[in-house]
Every structure is written in C-alpha cells, then in structure tokens.
Image (tube, rainbow, N blue to C red; front, side, top):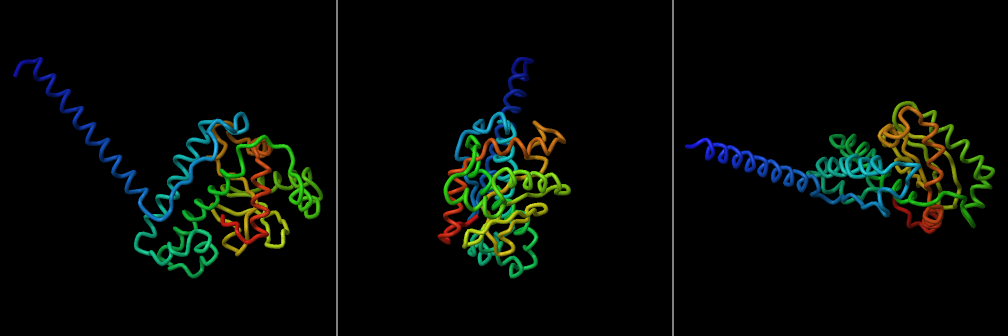
Length: 242
C-alpha cells in the first residue's frame, strides 16, 4: 500500500469510526426520549430573557438540565407503567404511594420535570406588575407586589444549597410563600404552584456567579404576568396541572 493510499485508508477509517459514534449517540438520545414524558419546548426564543437571564444559560438549563430530568424519569418508570399512568401531578401528589424502588427517582426527576415545566411558562415577558384579580390577591395576601418581591427574594436567598422559592395557590385563590429543597414542589403536599424561581446554581451561575441575590432581583424583569394570571385563573377553575 502506498503512503498516499495508506493515509486515505486511515482517514476513511477515522471518518467511519466518527460516523458510528455519532450514530450511536443519536440512538442513545432517541432511547432517552422514549417514554410517556417529553421535554416541552421553550415558549419563546432562548434570548428572550436577555439581559436578565443570558441565552447560554437558558439553552443549557432547558436543553440539558431539564432534558436530563425527563430522560431519567422515563428510564426510572420503564417498568412501572402504573405509576406513569398517574401523570406527573398525580404521581407527585401521591408520592408516598409510589413504590419505594422508584420513589426517589419520581421525587427528584419528576419534581425537576414539573418545576421546570412551570418555570419556562412564566418567563419571556417584560416584568412590570400584575393586574386584575391576581393583583388584588397579591395585595390581600402579601400587602402588594413590592412586599411580595422583598419577601420572595429574601426567601430565595436563604435557601441553603439548591432548591426553589414558590408562591403557592389554593383553589380558593389564596396565595402563600414557600421554599423547597432540591426539586421538591408544593405538588408533593397536595398544593398548587402559581409561580416559582429556580435557585440551583445552574440557573444563574454563568452570568451571576455567586451573586444569587442579584439574579433573584433581575428575575422579576423577565416575568410574563399575563401567563401568571392565567395560571391563577386555572387554579381556581381546577385545571392547573404543574
């Protein structure tokens, strides 16, 4: 074999190996996606929350972190169709009844899927202030939006390690502030989530590093109050899921 032919053979073999690896990666990704739960698309472009939340963080947070929760939940429940049949809010609300073998996975992966599915839908806006019934409820239960923001930011800054800060809502429209560790959610307590902010470091570290308080303050500028108001109405109508 001439040197030229040998080089061509080596290059061809390398390309073939790379193609096989790419094909294998595609099969793995496809296998990860198999199951009853799917990654919801962002309802806006990844750059929609600039400058409050940078584009790269949105892409990594949604396409990698949230996708991993979905894939891991599907894997965990592959042999437990009766659990998957409960649906996401159902299995979280009845977590104590989930078989022990998959309860932790449902808590962590299912909770992560639920929390993030809520999280994307309430952003992509321009901040400002709520109107109508939601504004009235915030005034009634928190003393107004500035008071809620201050209490919410303080609670979020006080979460030790990773977790979430939420405003929960009842069927009667009553609002309350709560924090949860890791990927826990008020759904696990039989409650409903109006809105919430992710204070895991992956949600803000590329832009804010260790400045969580700065991230919490900036987050209010990307909220879509119309979508949050729709969640408030859905909670009272009994149709709010995650």
